[in-house]
Image 1: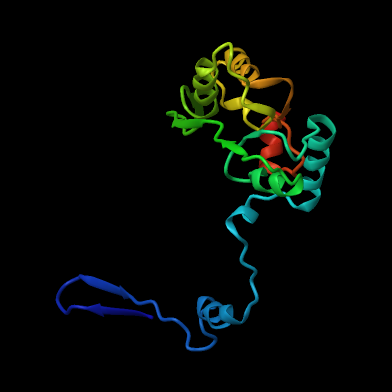
Image 2 (image 1 turned 180 degrees about the vertical axis):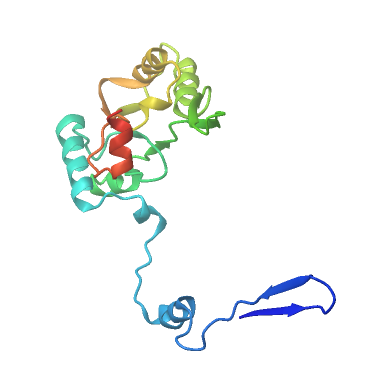
Length: 203
C-alpha cells in the first residue's frame, strides 16, 4: 500500500511504503511448518552419515581379506579418520580377538588466501606420524614388533615425511606381517560434476 501526502504551501512530498502479506494463501514457510511433523524423515547415526554404503564396505572387506589376510588372532592397527572409519566394522567382520589399535592419521589446517581460496597445510608431529615415531624409537633390539597387520586408509596425505614415517611403521611390524595402503587420490572422483565445475576444469 502506498500513501502520499502533500503539505499546503510547500513542495514537500513524503511517500510511505508498507508491506502487507496476503491472508490467503498463508506464506510457504507456514505451510512447511504445518506439515513437517507429518513427514517421515529418517535420522541416521553419526557413523552412518559418512558411510558410502554396504557395497563399498563389502568391497573394502574383500580387499582386506585378499591382500592383508587378516586372521582373528593377529594384532591389528587401523590408521584412518574417525569420519567414515571402518575400524569397528573390520573388528566385527574378521572377529578379531586381540585388542585393536585405532590411530588418528593427522591434521590438516586450511588457510584462506587474499583470492578467497583455501590452501591446505599439513601439521607435523601429530597423529600417526608421531605415534609410529615414538613407538619405533621405544623398541629395542630385543623387543618384538607390536603389530602383525597394519591398514592405512586414506592417511598417506597427512604424512609430512612419508619415507621416514614408513620406516617407522615397518619397524613396528612383525617380520612376516603385512601393511595395506588404501589411498584415494584427491583428483579422482566418480561423482557427477555440476556445470560450473566442468567449466573450471576445462580452462
